[in-house]
Amino acid sequence: MNLDGTLRQDPVAILPNSNNKGYCRVQLDTLSLNHFKTHLLDNHISTYDRTYLWRILFDHVCLLKIRPEEFVQIVADNLVLEY
Image 1: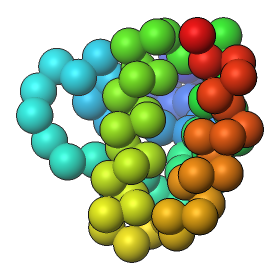
Image 2: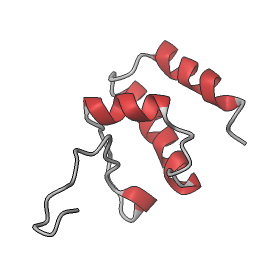
Image 3: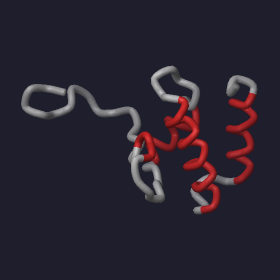
């Protein structure tokens, strides 16, 4: 962050309610959704937030923002690495 409070660069993605401090249903914007679909296992995402992201992605299936086939593909792509 710059001294005037502005960001140095645009964020790649935003995770509202990180660390799940309160109850809310999170709907990710398109940019964040696309980022997290392909970067779930990045080192900078804590185990807690990654678990939370799995729930958010499943909710997006229920909200018709992700097709079930796409969710299953995301699971298949990440399941081997998720332990």
